[in-house]
Length: 325
Image 1: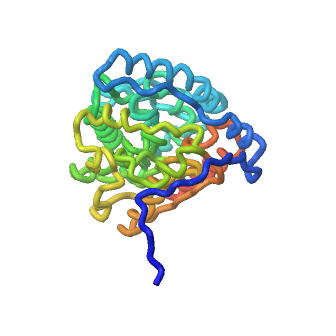
Image 2 (image 1 turned 90 degrees about the vertical axis):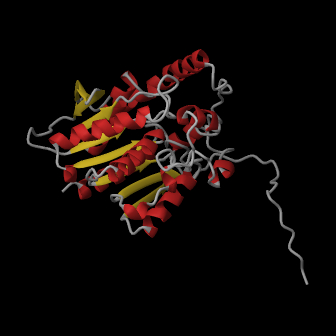
Image 3 (image 1 turned 30 degrees about the horizontal axis):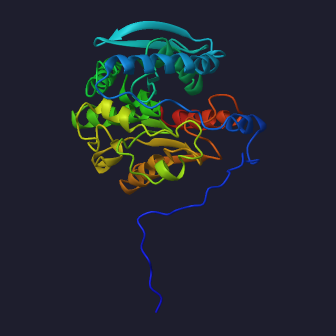
């Protein structure tokens, strides 16, 4: 009789992971940059250090947002939605009678991406979905931890519903924005608000406990998301339970209601498990769901530098066009 030896971890030999030839030359060049290193996160209580870290990251990421927004040419109006700053972005050739709206919740690890970055991200999103976009400039830590960011997103959704039928509203976001988009839908459901027509969750951060398999297996190959966000998650949560569905929507009871959902990830994305597990949970709840996983893509994809990003845009556009009724 052969005995099985049970181990609580798997030791793998050190090895070099080559840049794959299965993707475009541009994607290969992006991946060849190697792991994007970053200093350790500050202690939770050091507010000034967190603010400096956030400002430095914003400055480093700004060229990417400028690149993504450069070719859209949208009109942008700054307004307030129940006290929350919102950039209303109207892409070219949008009819005045077109009442579709995409409520865009920006990413940025739950601590950055506001202000001008939020505006640029909203412009890029409007170009992607081809419709008027409300980009929510929600409050963030360290000054405004949970539930303030989610409160702002819910307030903006209430404001949208005063002007648009829910069947003409789609909610979405990428990374941390996908977390807040999903949490917003859960809050809206629990508070008796009508649900939007659909949700778009791109490379979603849906589990702040970081329990999924690819948080470990992909950490060595995701050149963008190789650093655990647990210190940021704790800063954002402000002492609340990281497993609460409003913080980790993956753990929600989705049978209580959720709109049709598009999920994306990459084979090198540390959040791949988030997308896969959410897809299975939504399927179990009989929610119409699409999951698109892209070859060799790290967290966030290739940031507009490779033709593979156009494949994501195409899937998003087809999905939203199908669900706006």
